[in-house]
Amino acid sequence: MLQKIEQLMQEISALHAKNAQEAEALRIKYLSKKGEISQLMNDFRSVPAELKKEVGMKINELKNFAQERINALKEGAGESSASGSDAIDLTRTPYPITLGSRHPLTIVKNEIVDIFSRLGFTLAEGPEVEDDWHVYSSLNFADDHPARDMQDTFFVEAHPDIILRSHTSSVQSRVMEATQPPIRILCPGRVYRNEAVSARAHCFFHQVEGLYVDKNVSFTDLKQVLLLFAQELFGPETKIRLRPSYFPFTEPSAEMDVSCTICGGKGCSMCKGSGWLEILGCGMVDPAVLEANGIDSSVYTGYAFGMGIERITNLKYQVKDLRMFSENDVRFLDEFTSAR
Ligand code: PHE
Image 1 (tube, rainbow, N blue to C red):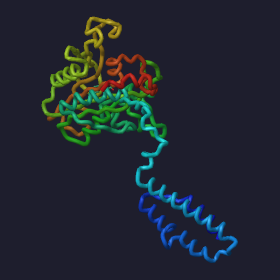
Image 2: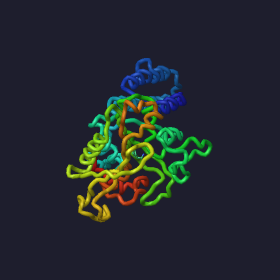
Image 3: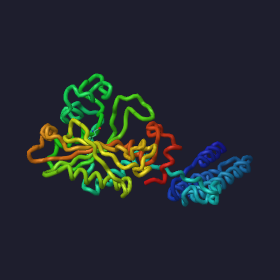
């Protein structure tokens, strides 16, 4: 009998109830008329007289303990376990919530995407691990073009044809081979070049490339879109100038400068006294590129442009060292909490 009482004590002290229903089921199991404890009381009659006192006390103890325990379980199950408990001080000042911020490159990329999406450009993406065809051959790079050189391109060792894309122009090629004009896309993404890492160069960086192919697309369209873009990004006073340049996939090709974002064109250390800052490359899509990607160059023309996001971020926020962008130093990243 004493053993049985001891065993029930232990059993009851280990009880749990998830909700009020479970707690009630336990009350019935132990404390109702036919419950385990009442059963003990019935058996009490057969206890020898000399033990009656001791056993009686123990049974009472057990009954009180069970009542307390099951009441406590009922209370606990009725409320969510935290409130009402004096372990929690609701008057304490809460810990401040530290807000994260977007990465500066994401902020600037979003801004660029936003401007062009208002002009009807939609987003297109492609793989970072690419084949030679989409990065170079389909874009009119001659077999011996220096950009294919080991110094520039990362090759996948086991597959000389598989490389890390060195520009997002590969997405141009993928979209053109899959769709007929009109095509009006913007391709943001990470690109890789085999450069020694320093304040001014990195082995990976980010670009946004734009492509527009349709009937009657002209250089004037390109120039007007880029002027609007520059003024949206750097302010309405911004001027642009186009200088002749060369890219294998555009003809004619140009590089675009904007009037210096610091001195407005007067000449300062930022623009090295010239008043101009170079921000992107552009041009009319070479007809050979249209043909290589299955688009009839006697019907369609197009323009393309491409820019480095790091470069533009540097100009907007005067970041002096490219490595800051990939070091995840919270002191640097925190400076952009209030930016968009
Ligand atoms: N792909 C070129 C680069 O990486 C940029 C560019 C894109 C130039 C489109 C002209 C047209 O430098």
